[in-house]
Length: 113
Image (cartoon, rainbow, N blue to C red; front, side, top):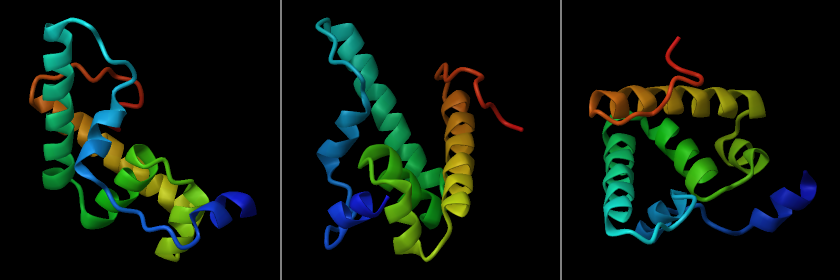
């Protein structure tokens, strides 16, 4: 745990535009799939900007997009791991709802409660 925090000491947690493309697991070869991935990521990015609170946005982008360890995010926010996980959970719930409203099939795992 201390090693993870030390690795991030002095590094800023910012989100560059190209970081959104890293959310896709694989890069498909066919143009149709590539277009769908780009459209989905654009929807996620819009929803993060429009539907999340500033804190949820910061936690989501740090942990999901930038892969910052929860300990580092908690320390930087002056919060506990549990509070950060709850914030991330709520952010993901809001994103699922917003993406489903746009017509994306986001599955039901951990759906709205």
